[in-house]
Each structure stands twice: as structure tokens, then as C-alpha cells.
Image 1 (cartoon, helix red, strand yellow):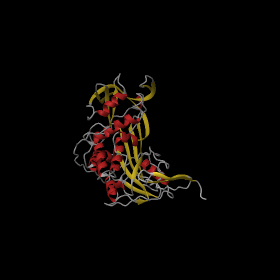
Image 2 (cartoon, helix red, strand yellow):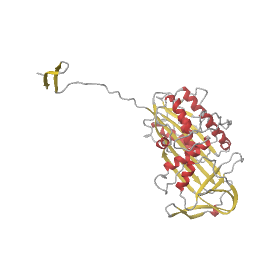
Image 3 (cartoon, rainbow, N blue to C red):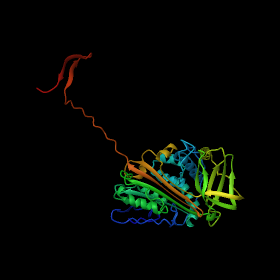
Image 4 (cartoon, rainbow, N blue to C red):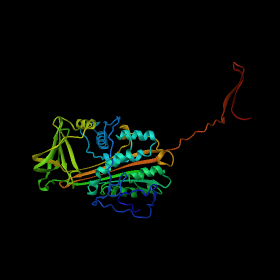
Amino acid sequence: MDLPRRSKRLAGEHPAIETASSCDTPVPSPRPQQMPHQLSGPSSTPGKHTQRPVEQRHQEKDGLAPCSSIAQTTQNIGWSLLQRVAGFQHADQVEATVLSPVSVLIAVAMLAGAADSHRRSQFQQKLGVAEGLRAHVSALYADLASLANQDIISLANAVFADQSVEIATEYKKYLGAFQAQSWQFPSLADSVKDINSWISQNTLGRITDLLSSRALRKCHVVLANAVAFKGTWKTKFNRQNTVLEHPFHLGNGSSRAVEMMFLYKEYVETASGSNYTAVRVPYATESDSSPAALVAWLPNPGFTIRSLLEQLSTTNSEGPSFRRRKLTKFGFPKFETKSKVSLIDELVGLGFPIKGNYPEMGSGPTEVTAISHEATIKVDEEGAEATAATVVLVARKRSMVVSEEVLVFDRPFLYIIEAGENRHVIMCGVFSFPV
């Protein structure tokens, strides 16, 4: 099954679902070095994006800090999910974890279109918008359009369904606004290689086996988002300055050796707060109006990474105010992190109305059975590569088994005959077998 490398608009107002068989045709090999060129998203054509005004409003949300824009929502979702999946609730010594809030947000926004009007409104409130979810996500895509045209970032969406599913026309239109490529297979479980291939091709070949045939066995629809980022530092680190074994101090007082990159006598953007020092390391872009950067927060001595994350996740602000200053020495570690997590319980814990039926999807009652997320990041002297994919697995709800009210006296029993208002027992007996 030769799946396209990048998603494209569903054809027309009533896009046809493409039918594919994964049994007889080879799966294309991923091309990990090639960056997807398109940013496929709401109300956009390949390489073209129109800015739409965003009315900034906010709703109070359980589990998330209030926010006034879709950009603030992505940050809040990221910090809040990181608290839940990185082990912060159990100890200060946490696992290295990476997530993509943008990928999660887009996947959830795609799902929201299949909910009824009441729950869709709840989704919108949790996503920080009062109405017009697609318009707000369109603004997100428009903000990233210039970086997409520079092959720095790529976003792609897809919906995969088995042939027993007839997706509702209105929901097709909704997914079309997300530029979601649509595919239909005889069996999703038997087509897992094709779906994983699409994910791999849209994540620089770094995410190759997010789904398993077992996970898809009872699944009828998969909503998928893929994100890829590839940036080169504006000021590269000289490899000759990299220290191969530099101590990295852990929260428990011990240390481990890491490869530490260094810049000497260079201007670096820094900021400071009461409990942290932050740095902003920009990537090379064609214009300052379309910036990209890595921002990192280092807790001050005596403060934990846990307390800093709690502060960031509950603060509604645009972040630190950076200023350029010349540092004698700036060190930042080379690192590579890969995370694979289940998010359905975490999103429910943040107040997203994931549980329930999605009647606008079509083909009868449905329910979300899993939301899986995988992300990778690699940082070195040249820059950074980061990828992520989020998949929402949807299955038909099992019909309630209506138990028939059956009563058959087919074994020995006692009986009486009663009469009168006071129920006098006229006869009593036991029936054990026919005579």
C-alpha cells in the first residue's frame, strides 16, 4: 500500500474515503533524512496559509491553568501532562520525558468534531476557546506556515477506518478542514504496517512502531497526527569544544557523565526568576518574524525541578523576558530522549470529556479505547530534531446485552394455594417429579 508521505486535503466538500488493501502491496521504506515540506492543516492548501483573526477568550478549566489563546493552551497542556507522565507525583527524581503538546491538541481537536454539541463545547473550553475550534487551530497553522515553508516544521493528519465504517458526511467535512488524509482498509489490525509507515514517513523515520495489530484488533477508526521539527542553531556549537564526559548532577545528589557542548564568549539570551535561570537558544530562520528556539529552565540551587514545573504549569504568562548578554562560557548537554505513553487517563484527569459516545462520527455508537503518544528529540552541536505522533483509537460501543426475563420451574419446587384477604393457606406441597 503506497501511502503518501504527507497528508493532503480531502477532495471536495464530500471527500471520498480511499479504499486500500494492505495485503498484497509493499509498504514504502521511510526516508528519515528527508523533511516533509508541507504543513497540512485547517483551511490550508500545500504551502499556502491564510492568517485568520483569533478572538482571545478564556474559560476556567479544571486541571489546567486558565489561558487566553491556543498558544497558551499548548503550553499548559504540555506542562500539565508532563507532571503526570514523568513521575513527578511520586518523587523529585524523574524520568527523562518528551511530549508534543501541539500534536496532542490537534488530535484532541480532531476527535472533538465527532462529539455531540454539549461535549464539543466542553472540549472547546478545555482547549481554551469559546467557539470556532477549527478557526483557532487554523491560526496555529498559520503561525507555523513560514517555518513549514523553510522545512523546519511539518504537521500531518490522517484518519484510518475499516471498511465496515461509514464516516458521516459532516464529520468528513470537519476532518477535511484539518487536511486529514483519509484511508479505508478491510481490517485495521491487518494494515498496521501501512499505518505505522504513514507515521514513520511524517516523523523523519524516527517513530516506526507506535501501533500494534493487537491494539487495533477491536478498533474501527484511528485519528492520527504527526509532527516533525528539524532546526539548525543560529550559532552552532563547535564540536571541538564538546566535553565527552562532563558531570551532570542528579536530584538525589549523585552525578552521571554526559557530553556537554560549549560556547565561549558568545552572546546568549538569558532570563532569571526567583527560582530559576532560563536560556533561549534560537534556530536559524529566514526572518525574525518566524522565530524558532529551544528554551530551557534551570532550577536555582535549593529548588527542585518538580517545584519549578508546578509553578510553570499554574502560571498564565508569556514566559520569561530574555535579554542578550555575553557569557564567558555557556554549556548545554547533548541528549536524546524517546517517550511512549498512554494519554487517555491523563487527559480525562485534566478534565477533557474523552469518555462517552461520538455520534457525529457515524456508523453507530462509538467510544475512545486508547490515546497513544510517542515523541523523540535529539539535540547536538548542529541543532535539534524532534518528532511526535498521537493516535486516537475509536471502537464501536458494545451493545448492551438485554437479558431475557425467563423463569421455568424445571426442577423440584414448593407450592401453596392461598385464599382470602388474609391469604389462608388452603393447600401446600412439594412437586419433585411427575407421576
